Amino acid sequence: MAEKKAETESNASGSPELLLRPVIRKVDIKNTHFAFINHNDDTHMTLSNGTLQVETVGKRLAIDFGISFNDIPLAFAGSFDNARFLADNKVTDVQIDGNAGKVKLAVTGSVGPVAPAFDLDLALAMKADSLKAFSSKAVRDLPNLGPLSMTARLKGRQGKYSVEDMQAILRDDILSIDVKGSVEDVLKIQGVDATADLKIRSMDFLSKIAGTDLSSLGSLRASAVVSSDDGRFEIKDFKADLSGQHITADIAGSLKDVQKLTGIDANFKVALDSLDSLDSLAKRKLPASEPIELAGKFSGAGGLKEPVAIDVSLKSDGVDANVDGRIVDLLTAAAVDLAFDIKAESLAKAGKLTGLQLQSSDPLSITGQFLTDEKAYRLSGLHLSAGKLEAKGDVAYQPHP
Image 1 (cartoon, rainbow, N blue to C red):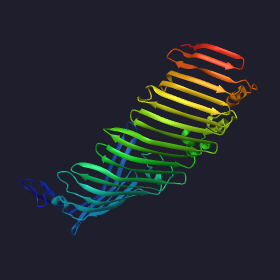
Image 2 (image 1 turned 90 degrees about the horizontal axis):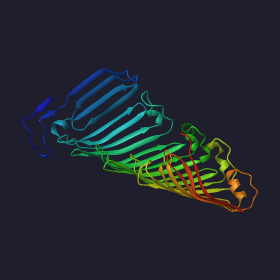
Image 3 (image 1 turned 60 degrees about the vertical axis):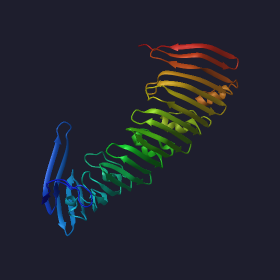
Image 4 (image 1 turned 180 degrees about the vertical axis):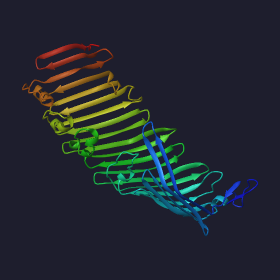
């Protein structure tokens, strides 16, 4: 049934009334079926055994909905406290509980008025025993990790919708993830402010995905702050700590524009007991070196195809090396301009780091500049000193086209 008014007025509460004011008495839909097949890629979507029952019970409006989506059962039941909230255009409390397969969902709060915009204030909750609960015929099989839960508050007023107090948690012996945040404008995806924390007990968990053995890297902890402004997403305060039996690493940085990969600023430190502890990762035998410390910084206002400043230093037993300069295109390593300075207390210590069996105690010094362009590789201002040996000059190599 629908009650009709000749013109829109303001009721006693001051909110505008609707020209068409529906009052729902009863809706009963059963055994609905729908199928869609895309012959181009052989994907399909099926909705079957659909039922919808809406009925006024006293002052409440009760809802019971069920359907099977691609063989995943969906079921929701609940009520609105005021069955006439559409007709009266007033606020009403709502509570709906349900499930999508093995995912449990709950909605509580209030909705209305529905005009001139649909106002709402809802608490949303989701729980699942495992990520596998989100696997379906339309989605790749997900790992058996969990449990996981998510809560958030969805608010809407005068056509603007926001998410507050959002929290998503995944807990597993192997992996844990915590995400907290808010979205100022959901429809425009603006005003995003979120923090994320990640813990991986063993990097071996990612070995299959990476296609190589990562067990030597140990555990990983990472965190970041993500924000958005005018459609631009920014990563701030990114931190990652890697802790293995023979290696530790710390990375800190930020990214001004995630979509364009611009505004890169990163610092890293790596401590390694010996190069040969990474044999499984490198898939080959590496030298049994003394402990190594590596530190560096990358920064660039542009993207990965724009100039990036690099400053990297290495320290090992009696060996110090530094490389600084810039690379125009990190993806192709084009237009490299790097100055290098390598010092070793002896050729023997330099050899141990590189896997060469050298017995000489003569000191070693190598300085110069490494440059590349579209046509050639060049060593400019090369100065090599090893004991009584000293060499200076420039070297160029031009590959055949």
